[in-house]
Image (cartoon, rainbow, N blue to C red; front, side):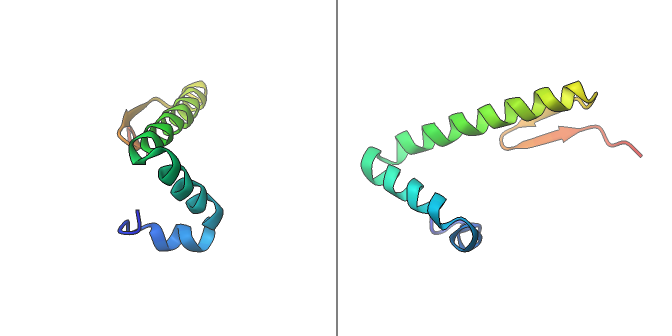
Length: 72
């Protein structure tokens, strides 16, 4: 976790979140924490995709990114 290039940003702006993730990993192990975080990511992305579709924007979900057709 601390090796992530984003760690310093989250340490500065979201210390409570990092603390909760660290404590969850300590209590349940990193695999369980990862499963929880991935489940939450999928739920968030699902809601975002549904909203975008309602707006007429159709996207492809690839890992942790959304891809769409470029419009000018």
